[in-house]
Image (cartoon, helix red, strand yellow):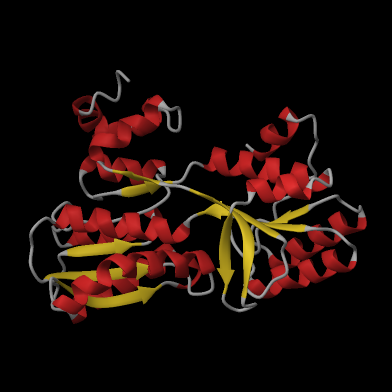
Length: 310
């Protein structure tokens, strides 16, 4: 999508993927800086790795955009991503709606990696909605558990451990993304609780959407990646052309970097709460193919939601 957005503007980007390898990330960045790119756009794997690259770029006079994830303590001039606090708020609102009127419902939170600032912001958004309910006793927080590296298997193990320690009791689960939600649902299935305990998610993955259609997962959050790619391309092109006023017109938001103690000029995009009765909208918008979504055991649920016809 990024390539398409740049090509549409008759610009051929130099794009590489480090595939989660920190050393490869540094090597790719070094090569881009050596080639004197007009703008360097990175998705840092870690704050330290991102900052090391940004220092080299700054020394070479190359502006940097943090894409989808901020380098905490970094030096990037701009950031493009989703409003992660709002994503967390949508998750919390969805959970509360799914729970219905259940005073004192016991909640377990399975959060993302503590090293990922996005995960911190998701949690911040959830807390902005749920903390008052925990304080009042309307809901009871059993435990909030971060999961290193967003590791799904570890997330499932940690959830099962917390569940056991709570006597097997849980009424709702805040899972930070669809992968962790799937791991939670796997544990719930073993106890015949899947579909009875609302579970949140994020990313509107095919597996997540299928879980929503089955009723095993209550909600997911859709983040339109195409919008993110197009916004990043527009911003990068403006900077590359020296149109900093135009770049600032695009980056109308600010994201606070608590480590560097500064606000980063940002393009912050909105997300959408997806429930069983709104999955169809993603099919009609071409986000997911009905044949892929509706295969196997969710065919009947798709028919009930008029997805196969949609």
